[in-house]
Picture 1 (cartoon, rainbow, N blue to C red):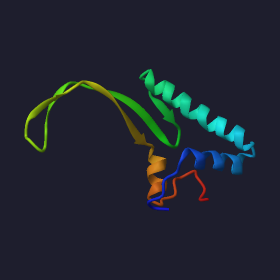
Picture 2 (picture 1 turned 90 degrees about the vertical axis):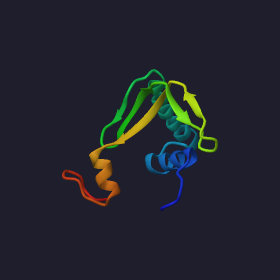
Picture 3 (picture 1 turned 90 degrees about the horizontal axis):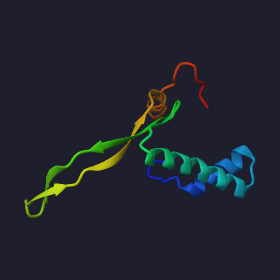
Picture 4 (picture 1 turned 135 degrees about the vertical axis):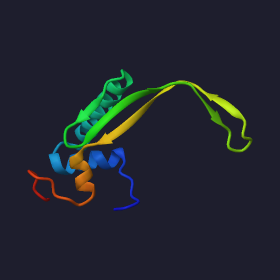
Length: 105
């Protein structure tokens, strides 16, 4: 599985296969969940998904950067960035560890 990319279509297909909704309903469900997460992040809210992780919006102030080709200093405008912080459960699963209270699949 290393190197593979999971797309929206893949997520929709997984919902279709595992939940039993129609393909159209599965696609709508995935889109609604992603839209809700996007809307919350756009408002600056933290999105926390238990046993998965948190999506956090942080504000970065203006700073001086450097053009690597010319060495010229360039101001970098203030901006908001999104950070994902995985839960300890997700970290353990990625590393092949069994978390207490969870069964192996």
